[in-house]
Amino acid sequence: MKNKKGITLISLVITVIVLAILASIATYSGVSVIKSSKFTSFTTELKIMQTQVNSIYQEDANGEYGEQIQEGEIKKQAQKVFEELARDEETGIQSANEFENYRYWSKDYIKNNLKIEGVEQDFFVNLSKRTIVSYNGLNYEGKTYYMLSQLPDGLYNVEYEGPNDGKPTFDVNTENIGTNKWKITISNIQYDGYINKWQVNYRHESKTYVNTTEDMSFVVNEKGVYYISIENEGIKSEEKITIALNQDVKITTDSDGKLPANTQIKGTSTYINFDIGDTSKYTITTEPALPLEVTENGKYSFDINITDKDGKTTLLKHDVVVDSYVTEPAYWIDFAGTSHIELNNIDQNDLLQDGFTIATKVNINREQQATKMYMGLWGNHYGNEGINIQFVEDTPIFSDGDGLDYTNYYDKWTDIVITYNATSQEIKRYINGEEKYRLNWEYRPYEGFNIGTSFLVEGYDRQMIGKMTCLKIWDKELTAEQVANIDLFKEEIDIRKDDVYANINLKSEEEINKIGTFVGTGHAFKE
Image (tube, rainbow, N blue to C red; front, side, top):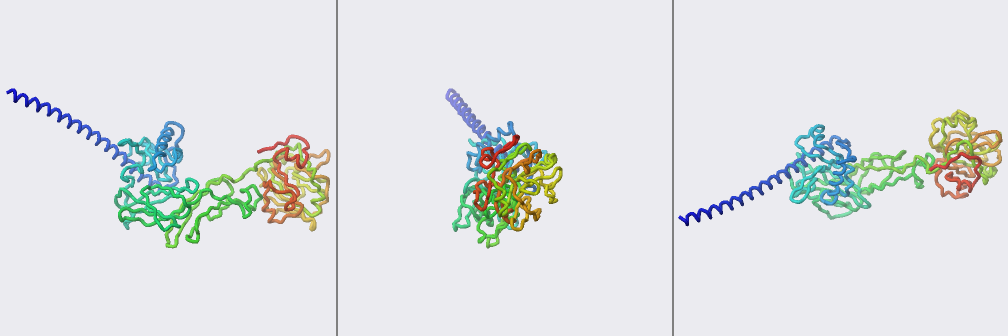
């Protein structure tokens, strides 16, 4: 009996131990199953969102969905998440600041506004790149996941109903990310079936060998056309072509390389132009066509169509941001109608002997001009003698009765040029590079020359109210083509070079003292 009781006690102890082990195993398995279930649910939501974002992009690529990421908890979380993603090469996120290109989609917004069911988390979304980032992410086996590209075994390729020929298709985007660095991204893979991992093949136009990678986003460092395909164990897509363009586009003017637009008289314009590759190997066209004339700062979008000798074609989008278009001169003098400048070193006899050209840029206020019986811009005269240009009180015309309507030029920077041919005694007036008026008139020299007034007789007030930025004088008549290409802000013009008689930049009293004397007060220099 004692032996039997001993055996029973030992059996009981062993049984308890086994049950404890089994309980612990069950508990561990349960926890593991729960974790795995959460991860599966997490990845399923990422796939659902990726599919929906792809669909939205196809219908409205430029739409603005969700909320901008502004100050507050959402921004703090975005900074935290993108800082982590920037440290993970698999994500393709280069900088923590990339969150600025994303918008916040809450789960309520996704359900109520986009009518997407089965999503229980918030996201950061870049629709233009079709990229989604989980707001909170999920920690699984020691790693926090936020994006499809981070998932193991290539589970980031969403299942799609693909084309009829059974070949996979994809989208490719090329982005300039630095000097001689471009990021090529493969996205929106469509295939009738599920494949865990795609291999990307890419080749530069100048190379015979093919590079391969399993990363859906990779960096190249050579400008030009690339051939891209994807494959997996014999399943291979058609090749697509893309082009790596330098983002530092050339903002040019004319063949002489003058300054950006609006720093010269109309006729020399500003254009966008950029190198689009070897046109001997490819047919490359842009819409709008290059070079593109621009008249203001902003973003200009181009469609680039590329066709190679085998007939492969692609359509790329390329944006150029212009921020160097000049709408205001760098400096000017603001005359208040109480001062002018006597140019002591200019003799009207020199100008009238062989003819002259006088060019200036002014901004005249209509209401202020109307307060003066005569408002003189420059010159000096008495009666019919001497060189001058002035406005008549409360009219849109110049004082010599030419009938030129100046209404459209008030309150904006305007180029005014007068030319005189001493032989034919023909006067021409140009506004913004275009000839507006001509007259046969014999100039006779008078005393001195001035800026900011036209008449120096005691008791008469013909001083200027308005802005002037420069004055350039040639002791010859310039042709219409030369007038159209005058660069009024080019400071390095040498006196007596190209028959330049005077090159006066009105940016400081120190500069003015080199060529003349101020009379009166009230003027101000502006930058």
